[in-house]
Length: 268
Length: 253
Image (cartoon, rainbow over all chains, first blue to last red; front, side):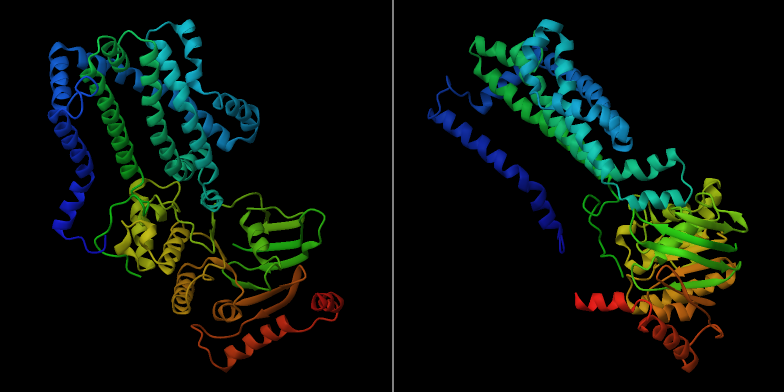
């Protein structure tokens, strides 16, 4: 960070891609040479062909859209509930006494264990998946919001009171921004759980979506489609992680850790 | 703003009183310094006057009226600057101008930053400022609302010697310009003598010494200065008969 020449920065930008590209190249070569049997593992080219085929037939865009929609709706519902409870319990002792221990008990139930029950309740449509995603993302958001609010410097809150900030302004200007780094950690973690939950739920019981596409392909032994789906998962996870990172960069730009490195060191 | 403390007492739980029947009168526009050993209750006294805490017993009058809660025309400067890290220097200063329009508040913030010599840093984050600069921003934030009472809770304690002298001069200059009442809590006797009209020494929960500093401003460290400094220090370090038994026990431990 001290002395970053243009060439070094370009090298740094390429660095994360070296390993994935290498893996794909080796994989393709082994497949082409017949070391890896195509019956066990399709080559990257075959997977790409499957992607093109499924895109043209419209199956891939449809599955992607369905899965993304479920993920987002579930995330919004669960995230809002978790955030609200975290917010209220972070400030009001009574509310925390009333709800926190119950929330902790539910949190310790692996939410995927509820799939059989969820199928009975909601069938294999959207509702069940949305319910599971919401349940999965609720807890990381709740815990991190609560923790974030608790760890806001009491000195800053006292300062706000001395300077005549009302309750609303105190939340807006002191408590929420102070809790934000922790809330965003929860958000990143929740995004991971969101995809995980959805994919497991779709794989076990569904009539569309990426998880269903993978399961369906397995029955017809279309391994190229199965591998394509697995690659899609990692891609989707990466995209949501990038989004969370973007939020961190724009909302926490005051934070020395997240802000852009400065050209000049701070003068004394 | 004038301040009157009458028989102010503070007890934490069932322990001995931190402040015990303390009486103190501060005239409007006066600069008072409160000194004393750590734990003598001088910060507690400041928190009472600010309205951040209430005494167990006794009365606090601000301008002759009983104090209830935080007074909007009083401002506190703490030992740490307590700037909001997620707001720019300018936004932090604007926090002191509650109730003003955005545009007016910004103008006043610029003006206050000019007073403390940090106009050029208005758009920076507090995290890139030095300790002394942060305290200057905190001072600008305290002064932007034209307070009638400024309470300073060891605001220079964490600064290096040179920055301290600079800050002392700045505080003195702004106090002379704006005419607010100032109460400085400090453990540095020289700082108290350099700034205050009167130095109050608190011991065993009450005023042990109330010494007017009859020196012209700006003060230089001449023999007169040394005389006052020595008088206060001697009094602080004086072995006290009434506390003799207690002191001996401490030595034995």
